[in-house]
Length: 183
Image (cartoon, rainbow, N blue to C red; front, top):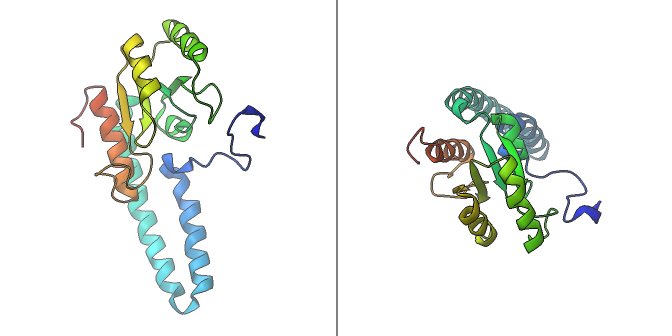
């Protein structure tokens, strides 16, 4: 419920940060489109099959490419990278928001700095649309760089479609740890 902040009472909507969630979504969309437009049902099914094949090849490639990211410790503004973290083996060691949707207070940020002395963060992750003020404050005190990720299609110039979103995210993270050039 909302007693813990701006929690999404119907569940975490940030599923798009793990491409392994997409097959179920794509299948549901293809089925629904075929119901709404039966004359083109075969076309929707074919396009879905093609998409899922491309996606599976891409996921295999991304998981291999992202192997150096396993164990990367991060602080996020919001609990919006949990699916990405689970998929790539990242470790969230803090959150700038004391509760989802609530802006960080001075007391919360001071405690976060103290907590990070025990479990330091390698990076601070922000979605491209999030306010950088608290992240910049934390970066000045911890030395952890701020990494801006696209979060969704259109989130940066390289995330121009679904597959580009994941490629841009992984390339940006790898560049942050010195393993690849930024996209």
